Amino acid sequence: MNAGPVKSRSTRQKTAVNRALDELTDFVSAQELFAVLKERGEQVSLATVYRVLQQQQQDGLVDVLNPDDGESLFRRCEAQTHHHHLVCRRCGRAVEIEAPAVEQWAARIASEHEFTEVEHTVEIYGICPDCSRS
Image 1 (cartoon, one colour):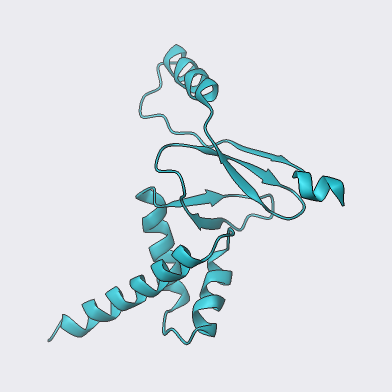
Image 2 (cartoon, rainbow, N blue to C red):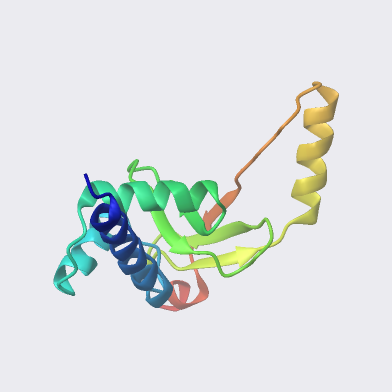
């Protein structure tokens, strides 16, 4: 059995997903990313899109928003350090923010309760200036 073609196919699919993520500026769901890839003529399965996004999330290469509708949204990270998001509830615009006070608070709370290996996500929702004006 020759494992070569399977590996190259997987690499080609992962490359297509990465290329699309690099080119998109807005957060997209896995389904939306799959539709973009399909529109471009890429032969990538939806399962592969989910798998690549999950791995990239674990590796810290994509930002993830979890809106109330339950469908995670993904975008290539712009910041290379731990950060949070300020998200417009109307248009979905997201601004990456650093919040040292939040980091200190999270570390203090975890320590007070003797928690280790702590992770956290902060997403602040509001209305962006453009949407506020319209």
